[in-house]
Image (cartoon, rainbow, N blue to C red; front, top):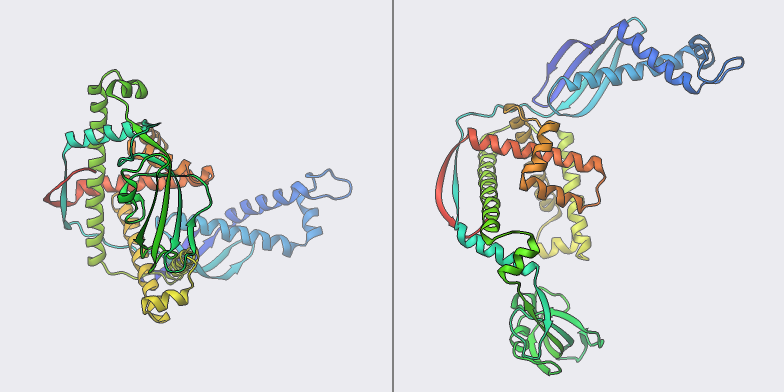
Length: 435
């Protein structure tokens, strides 16, 4: 660990520090550097990896060796100093050597730091109290589980809501006769659910039978570009009608490996209660964070702001690209100037950074950390954690990324629990059907 000779905070986010490295530390780094070079060094009369240090120095030059030692000394000692701070270093803006030899190294560093924020203890928040009609929610979830195990079976009857229907279809522009979709003699599977179909199609589909054909006109929905501002001529032909077969209670018990519906309901109730508790903590934390963002004023590191602005800009441009739109088209449709748009991006960036800084200061305030024992416990016993790990498993992430995200998730989980315990909460009564 280097000796701190001087330490001065010029602002909330900029610190100047003078560090001194002793001869003992320099010697230790020198040995590491020479052993690393020695591994691959070859010289006449010596085996690879056995060349003496003095011969290596004579071959490579003392200046070259000292430069390597100096770089490693600064790298290691600066990392040691930073790790002792218990706060995020945003960037190293300058390093200046004052003394540099094998007896002593002294250097000045200017760094950008995440600001330390004094979080007040007397914060009160008002939050909607979450109430769940548990019995109704249990029945709803059982219906969902049954739906997951449902099967579709062919039927000769007319189409009813909830059926799966195999259709041929064609959609034309009524004015020009241009085919806009379908018309390729392929069979398409659709669900007879109003919200999943073009407006006006559901009403015509209901009541149709196998092999029946129908033509009708509808207004093109404004949210689909190819149909927008057009009157559409739709042609349907039913190839097959399949009705949903929902398992009985007895069939469901066998499928999910439960002895009785009472046991199944008991486990579902536990899940609902844990979810309710987690959602309530999320509401408390969200409101608490909003209050702190309103109350607290602090500097935002310039480098952090620059990076976040670039990130937000790139994310937005990527979104526009997926929509086949340019920034110029977006600005025109939104009636925004480029300067106004960039200011909006900056405000979003500042809000995100402010949130992150407050959270990091809260983690320090409440001394939140997560060890391997806790990780194992959450993985085995916490439904929310298990769901999160499942979500991570569906992403293309390596194990290191998964471990990092899980660690951050559990830090936030513990922080929310601590906030729910420590912060004064005034609950407002509100009834919700489900979590």
